[in-house]
View (cartoon, rainbow, N blue to C red):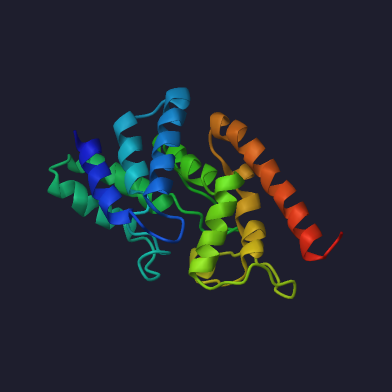
Length: 213
């Protein structure tokens, strides 16, 4: 089964990855996407493969090259003799799944794409999202917080992808915005609790940062 073959390939490639985009992240996105498909519909295999391959060449992991994931995923699937028409659908999802900036509209056109995007975004918020944000920031030697740094609402993918700041700033530039950019009713329901948890975390963070004893 092609899904199991892709699982093996992706797990081997991402095991031990240190930015929060490791195999465990991909597995959670896969499991969440499968759950969303059960509630919302869509082509199950397309969703599974796109979820497994969604980070296969993300700009955060490949040295900053944008929109390369679809091409890399296509090559992998072609080697497994997967149908070209379905490869094209998966590649389109992968190239569209990433958050591209606060002022950049989302453009997922299919329920399959919406589900994979929702699953990825749900893993970017809540307790896991907080942990992943600080893992990524530590990997890139970014400060926890810099009160002097002005948060940015980026108006292009290039500006967002190449921006550097502190990890708390990332909440305002992306994470706190995701709840209102989820596509499906099921994801929106799941996102409410995770969003609230992040708000509570930030309140406690500022209290401790400011030594409010």
